[in-house]
Image: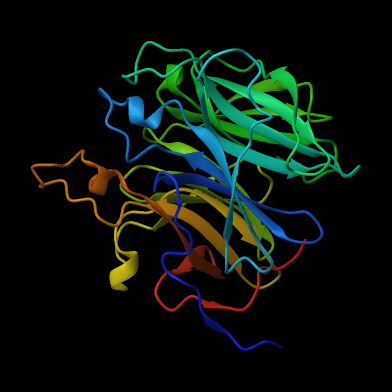
Length: 312
């Protein structure tokens, strides 16, 4: 067995705009791919235009430890102009086809409110060339942050997502084939949040959601009923290069541990007079290790012993 060494911190920095957020990680049989929202943290623009007009950035790695920037997905645009892509989710179907569900906003708004948000569906055979399959009809026109996981009985798939028209809570929809979706209704309504991510570890299911001051954790035996199970990534890390709150995450789970990829703002200081300047906007992707202790999820964001991601 390969010796464990600490994971790099930061794990990954975007070399173009210094703003990788909302990472998702997928294995294609040869290498790992990281897809993320490429925020334009270095752009001078009015309001929050810097978080819009974003492409989906791509990096690859042989083991999940060392990442190489590969550019952006230029096959996603389906209408003219500069538009906004956020928070990709990617799953692989049993037939080998990859399915992406990505948040979409037309244009480059300079404010948060007043703009439709949709989740769009794409398919691919190689993770680079994507075919637009259309929008996913869900519970409102204010939906983002899809997460998809197979149902326990093998009957299909469940999608969790943030519905901003319903309290910024997590809702769910089911599909037998990853194409046709039926809304189930609200799942988590404890407080406003975003970025749900679901994974299996140690014989049960876990969900983490970004509550903006840390990640709330829930556990489930069946993907239907969720029980609160604490908080992680609330800024309590001790490494100087990995302090701050951890946001919108993706998890790769193995038989004994899981790896959570998340983004943080390492230079953010809410008290700074330049609290919205490029340095404050800068984000990086970090990695932490997850294990379980009974009904609790344990996070190691300090030593992070690592040798390679567990391959599916």
